[in-house]
Length: 92
Image (tube, rainbow, N blue to C red; front, side, top):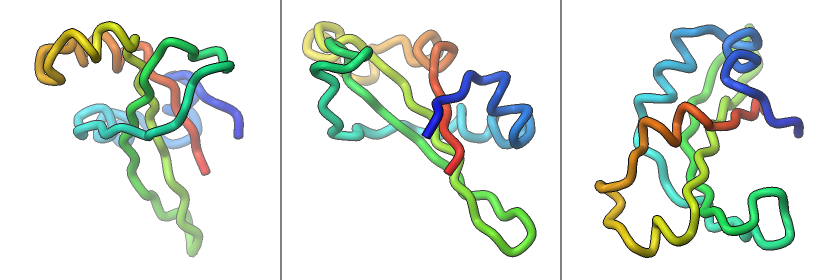
C-alpha cells in the first residue's frame, strides 16, 4: 500500500478524522526497519476505522522516532507533536 502525506490523508478521508487520529496514543508496531528507508527508526502507529457505505476501511498513522532517542528517553519525554507532524498515513 502507498503511504500518504497528511494532506493526502485528509483528501482521501477528512480533516476531522485525521485530527482524531493525531490525538490518539500511538503504540509500537514491532516492525523491523533495518534495510528500509526508515532504517535507524522505531515505528509507532495509531489507527481508526471508518465506514464508507457498507464497507469498513482503516486509516493508520505511522510515526517514526530514531532508535537513539527511544533508547535514551522515557516515552513521555519524546517530542510526539513534532513526530506526528512528520507522520505517514495509510488507508486500507
